[in-house]
Length: 372
Image (tube, rainbow, N blue to C red; front, side, top):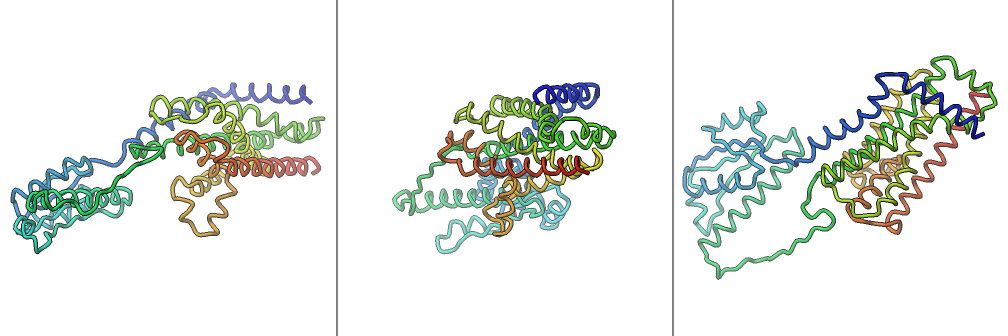
């Protein structure tokens, strides 16, 4: 058995490294992809171009503009009319706009009347718009409180004192959430796509029938075909993990040995998806297209794009059939929380169960092909 598997594995290595383009792409492509995606998404949303229509031109209105600028979320610039505000937001030159009406300072200093100010955001970019709204509300609240303290005096006090403490991501860095997710689905995509080509390539070249009439068993074929894809995928995972921890400063608070062991299991399960696709696809292009579609669905149901908890009950149930969803929970728990098996054992059991089902289905499909 071992001799047959090693012989098949040797053939796979020879085929891979004969391709002068595929081998460097497989080794360097995922690293460069993670670098570009993580770099572009780890900076947070700030310095939004912001139009300011100041119709009051008072010290109070200028102080409000300074408060916007100090938040570093808004990059304010002055416009002359409401038409300019409309044109800049519609044309994409501004992501937000503040409109300060005339008489703003007089109303602000009048304790009996609230001073109105308007924040307009471009809702076509939801993430930027939500950030602008959240920060804008904070700027307005902080500015209003400072004015109240100046006019009423310190004896009035503050009606509510809130103590805030953030656990596991103290700086609320979006990169600590985004980058591990990006690593997770890039690793899943590479494993599934590499494996999806393995058996489909033999069928396309007409050599699958020759393998089927040899003494090699279906289980040995699966092991031999997946070993190379697994070695490449796991190596890529380790390289990307090093980049995430050392280059992007994502903390690794848990056990590295435990993470590597669970990653080993997870990569095997994702390879199973690719092998199952490869067993039913007739050509490599067909296998890649199916694998791409599966990966896109996995990303949606993994909780990366939308929180799984906010999905309808049926969609939450469907999300559980994708190993990526369970892996991201484990990965973030080890990286950010330093958690152990006592925290995420249900997710680990889910991955093991899915892997058993996937490989059982793949071997069954190959046995049917052999009988045909």
